[in-house]
Length: 330
Picture 1 (cartoon, rainbow, N blue to C red):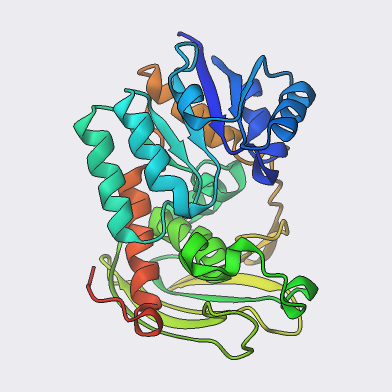
Picture 2: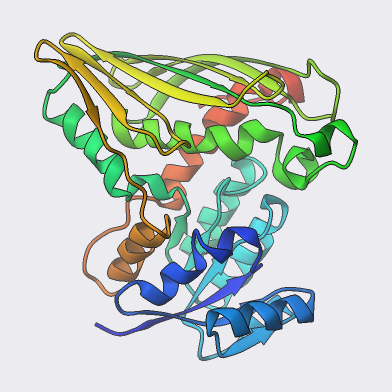
């Protein structure tokens, strides 16, 4: 297999541990260039991570002949622009989640990559993490029987930064697409798509209860999967504590697990109750990166693509449609 040489556009916090080192540690993979507008920060990142080149221009990184594939780790507002520029240069794209500001941009990214004959992957890395593959294995093996419904409850405290009016980009819709819901709930909704199949029907309500920023801070929804499984979700980002739990119920048992918190899953069925460890890898994106490198070398398929991420974007759009006056359907 050939070594895939990666370039990163936007070497911020997410690349420090979750993703960046994974490009170095995956088999047949190497991180050869990084870009950040602040040259001092780009140079510092390259030095600390053993990367040979750094840039302050995305154009220069994309056009570097030593870079085979591009990882875009900027906020969502620039995902479409950089994806289309990389695709035009004929380079495969791996883009952070959420995939874009909305599903319209996602479609344009998919079309742009298709038109230039390059694959598009999205960083919904739980699709490849061993702990989450174990959940899929349990469900597929019939450990809880036929799945009937899933319920998600996710709430967190508002940060002091938000209360002081120093708003992070993740609650600025023009940069993030929405509020924390887009950043955090996207992981759960995408994983449920991987676990139970595509969602077919969606109803949702979104509001801003606390008034700390203009994005939504609470979302409630219900949905039905193509398989007939029902789902409900409640996401609140002005609560008294941080909690994140999903319960999948079948006709022979249930599974309780967290999307974002590293804690044991709980399997309940006729055999009793069992705690099953969910241990995260040191670099959570490395298994997905490995699947992408393998696909680029013709040795398998990555489970997270532009098409699968588009489905998640559509569901999120519909859940907040009334708040942002979005028109459309799945």
